[in-house]
Length: 572
Image (cartoon, rainbow, N blue to C red; front, side, top):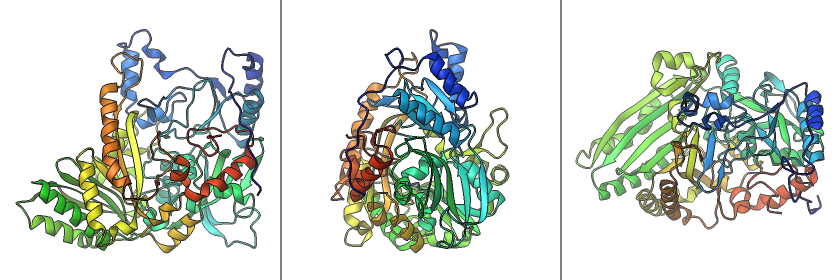
């Protein structure tokens, strides 16, 4: 494909400006989408003029509930980012029910030069699912259909591809919906996100890691087909046989960039017998003991956990201590206990140097019950928070460990991939030194499932055929440092973000990440979990894939209708 220079709109028209659609034109759009166009007001209007009112107090209490936010057209899971953006609602929203509704909204926005925004679960940390003075395509309320397939063949690929077990998921579904249908009901596994309330669409288009990505790959790597509305209003099928360039770009090129995906079909996998969790907190009594513990943790990880069975997090933080929250698949509880015995025995044998601030917990869950709220309510209620909103589905919950992310106002968020080369014996001391130096400034999390090095062969092969930064293939973990506060919003007295603390936190996060970023020759970061101020973001997010992605962007969206922060093509 020959590279063409895209023509980008120089300005979106805003309310009150010449060219903003008239009431009659909005009414025409409303009619074309079956009445599913709504005018949107800020959720925070209830706080004016009295921020101490009951309505305002109730709102901020509700902002700690992800399902309340999930059902609100005017809210997103992240309320803003210090010195970057504040989540503000669109002027109008189409509550899309079909690809025809999406096409109508796309055509309207293109014709009238109205900024277009797409929101499913609304979890974008970078604010890509909201924008003031825009037209929102909201898929969450009416595009949640899920169909499980015993044998799916992508359209146009008959005779070219073998049927595969798969699931088709509407763009408005969250991963709780997908896991319920595929695992709890059908007894299969689909690779999705760890947080139950994250939208399917945004996760897949950003790449998409889940707790068991070491075993099954990224969500994008398991995409078989997508239905997508492109900037010209055309409904297209993208798979390996039809529009393969668009299909590749959707597998990690970023949501809200190449079109509006209305349906995904994802490969499903045979379900292991068990999923499980290992949790513990180890505190050192001295700096020297802490340094030794970090080194031991790295060596133990390489020997026992660097394989397709293990994922999730190891935190290195103040205390000095290490917090462990790892998940496993395909092992029994006895096998998991045996795997961790060397580390826990090493700690126990040194009582003068270490204590278990939280005693180790190892729990295997029948895999079919892993997203079954009834199982947790009976056996492990501390792990889940059920959705208690009126009329809520009985099987909805979110993980208790995700509570702090709900309604957050970020102070800082940075990530960098860590190469598997750092796990080699000759490099382990450098990694340990960097982690110790980093944790003096801020807690650093290693998300061991968010890197494909050490994964199953099929997971590596399929992830190689995505548009993510190829650095993901060499990375054993994604290092993250982040800080923020809950239920804060600018301009609401008594609820405003703490600017002084926020900027102090941002400096500390930068200082913590510096020694870890210095371990790599080139910056590499995960698009869905990254810094709003990421330098050299084109290379960091996509590496040498970026020029090819811009070609796809220019072909399907030459006018730049789809524009998001740090999205492909936005630099022009």
